[in-house]
Length: 391
Ligand SMILES: Cc1ncc(COP(=O)(O)O)c(C=O)c1O
Image (cartoon, rainbow, N blue to C red; front, side, top):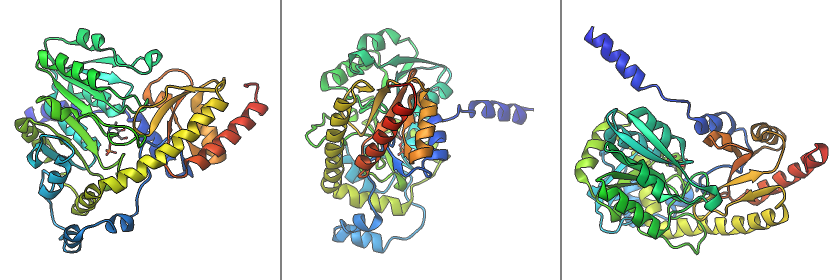
């Protein structure tokens, strides 16, 4: 009887809502010729990354044995990652098979049915739906588009309850490209610390954006109860490695999150760890290339939106390689996006995937072939405008 009941309880806990974005990608990403909605930077070939290896990492690569690896991630890799977090060391870092596993394990550790979480939206879906799955209650705070996707900190303050355990936000934000500034982060930390609440800061797009952008310290370096998330998938353009990590000053918390990883991936791929190590040691080269692609693509986009301001509007993204575009069109965006893909091979992500109302779509400008994709998009929109009643 007990076994039967515990199976039912487990089953009901483990039912998650459809992950709309991943589902959308799963049936369209590999059919598309132009990923104009993707959120990662241009990827590198293995050959290009291995060419960046120093003597030490080349030897590690060549002598790598394909056994299990350390649960926490290789010490060398964690040491390299720790350089990104002032004041933190290798033992403040826990690696995962991508950011998604890090979100899953962290939320599973920190949230339960007695707890309340605050989630800033719109966001990468699992930040919201996994909080909903694991916490007893969740309050969402929407970024304000009219204020340039600003976070209203008073709303965060008002949402706090006695059982609030975690405040979750993502900066640079997916899908808007909004970035919390230094003062906003400081104020958010003040709010969290005065109520002894954890902060989960999804920094997957950190270090990616215009070359001229300067970066404030990651939240994990600033607040003892903060967990910063980052990945090889976005700024480094190496999503296929499936390497992500969390950084926190709180080693006890890190240990409890590590225990949940025993039930998910156990450890990372050794191959991916070594490639990540090489890429992180050469981060100046890797990030420079990706930020320069964004410089170029954003300039093209600014001209495009200038020329087409009656059709499109957006809040200029402050960081990352995505932004949310409002399209002045009568056709529902989901239908338009499907027709666009079928006719041109250009993929955009309808705002409905992020539960955003109206005709909006996410645009991704991290890829080298973005100018070509935008040209195809523009030609199609012009033809569409002529053939339909919309102008
Ligand atoms: C904000 C954000 N966090 C986390 C992830 C997941 O990262 P990964 O692909 O490394 O699992 C994504 C992926 O799109 C994302 O956009």
